[in-house]
Length: 176
Image (cartoon, rainbow, N blue to C red):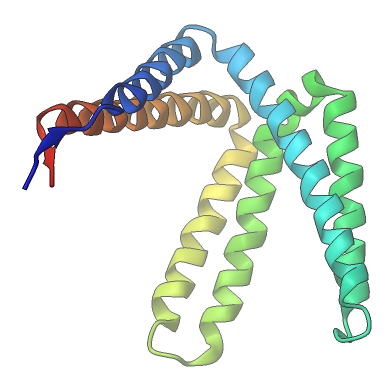
């Protein structure tokens, strides 16, 4: 049995360092981070819309409600184009967008929780918390923007540390 060290540990270590540096950039430049998030959401909506339209067209003979998927895809595509055309405006409305999205998802969870399954009470409770959080964000958009930047920064920091940890563990771990 031959044991050797993993020779690619440095790749994970490098990814971790990049995420840690990125987290500090988010903390130091919060406005640019929100603007970057707005652009990212714009591209995500455009790509999601295109894929959803493609899916709707590909299943129209098998899926009776394919038009709703098509409408959703066109709406996502339209929102993405608007977000990309006006990233500063998108960054300004992002807290309201997140707040209304949370309210919508919360209401959906509450109604889905009313089906009587064993997990339904928990799902309704989560929905209730989402609705409260959505209203709080909608009435406090500045606080939500700061919270969003903080959450992104902390997430990137912990994500980076996890990559560094795994990379360093691979130095000492031997494979068979």
